[in-house]
Length: 421
Image 1 (cartoon, one colour):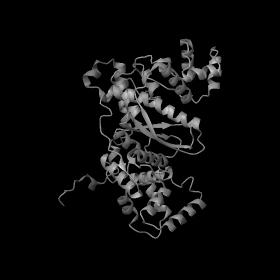
Image 2 (cartoon, rainbow, N blue to C red):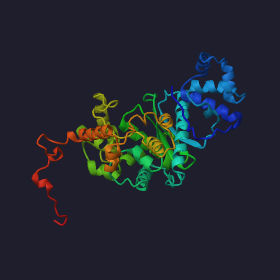
Image 3 (cartoon, rainbow, N blue to C red):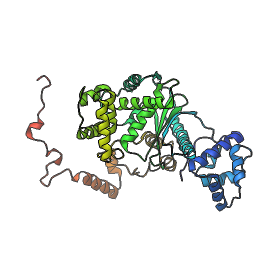
Image 4 (cartoon, one colour):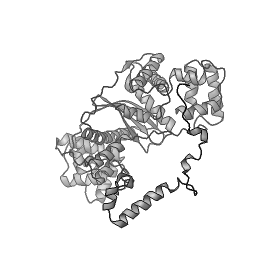
């Protein structure tokens, strides 16, 4: 069961029946439970409620008694105060990239979970950085044709100062650029991306945690296309093509593609594509599309390559995997910062970001202590820290006392060369 959380420091404000109704429905959808399942779970808690009664609560036709709200909170995995919290943000979803088999209920659940995560995320972010959202995002660029999508991607890379080199982490680029990246799990590979704006000023992208890193990178870049392109009134199919072109250009600029492949080629080798995938985090198939889109190879050769990949079973799972750093870090960073500054307790931090405190050692490491502090310690504690320090560096020394970290360097490697030569 997914658990929604809210900052305990946020005051409880009663906002009327409509707000309570919306929050009950949101919590139920985010938990993945049907109304029948909620009714059964309440019965196990000793609370009698019919499906019709629950439906009435969700429509705002009546308000649950406090005892029922407390039980609903336990069943749905939220604090009872959650039902009274006024959302402090407005989310406008723009695009939802998914397989047709992902039903409407599961789509609603992805959105509900994302909105709940965003509430906690933004509350914490605002508490630590009151001016969050003041930084101007680049304006949406009018895009009507594929070449415009290339220009829009280049413009965003320039605004975020990404240069022309491979992007180590698209997630990191978005977070550093003032955006939010969230992960949604449990949807297998039927869901790729969801994007929108928070309070009309902060871009947010939601991606699946169940797909490969190169697919996650492409999905994030694809959602950036929806966020930063103004495509006008084009149909959905055309908009998707423009977003695909934007994504490919954002991950690998045209200049980079031509530098890696050459300006014109008769043939591409799969070993070459595999190497480029591990370097740039763009799939082998996407590299073929990129080469064809930029007229580096003929469309006929691209079709031949795709047929060969299909015959080898590589269209579904490619022969090499890209290992990237596409896990959101901002929420964890904020929780640790709030914990360090005393804004959150360990319990609160763990509820907001599960696992965030599991590797935190309350004992101060020796590197953070001066000699005077060590001398004030009890002898047994001081000895323990000294043994810990000795153990941590033991592997760096050889039996003969030499420092092992330099053994791979030759004598000539210790000389500086003049930059004027």
